Length: 108
Image (cartoon, rainbow, N blue to C red; front, side):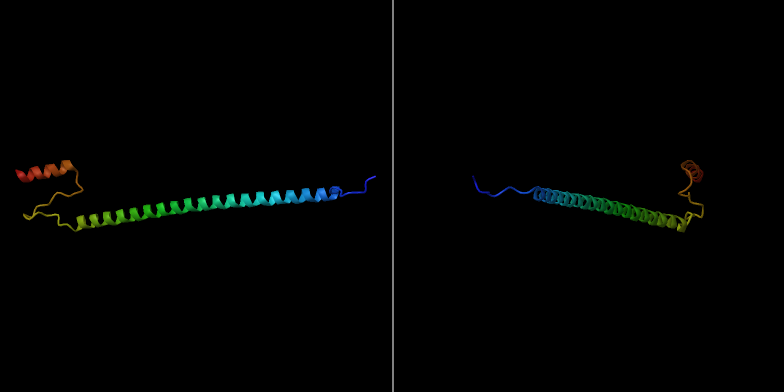
């Protein structure tokens, strides 16, 4: 009869190999999930940064408009409301109809 040749792996060795393979797959899966989450976090941070930049730009635009409006209103308040002949000038805030009436009365 034949002498004993090399035998295959034992059941314990097969179990250990299967366990090692499973751990390797779980580690790879965890690594892939971590990379995906990092990418999602990076994209979310970019969106937040873009939103913040737009909000700051909007705020600066509103401040600039308020400054310009304040300057215009200040100039209107500083304007002399009298004409060279001493009569009252039509106010920029009066209605168009009232201004037209005043201009007509000055023309008469």
